[in-house]
Image (cartoon, rainbow, N blue to C red):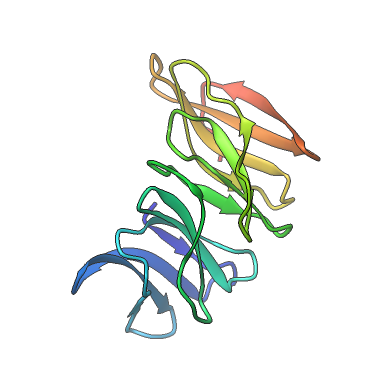
Length: 171
């Protein structure tokens, strides 16, 4: 999605066009005006940190982080055609760098991105989202020969495994 509601439900970050092209914008739901977020040109698929102080997004072939209290976006990892990300309270971001490369994880402060669910032939994976426990990730997964399917990926410490292959979506 090109928008994300903050964890406290009081703000929304979304993609919109304005002067200078498309940017991410931030709006308090208590106000009628929004503010463009500097350094987010071409940004898309935003997601929030659990504390609501930062957002992650994809732009320029990278996964980036923007702290809302100021500063420029920080590049965290390569993501040629980023296809969604999610951030847990332990400071881990799980993301799909493309729809065909599986899932990766990286620290919210940067560092090496590590494959957690490998790509599978003829399978697209996107839109990971940590469930409330912060260890299990729901994701969209589809074989190029099927209409749709859903899978869950579970974190067991540093070992991840693909669970719940199904023909219906997991949300």
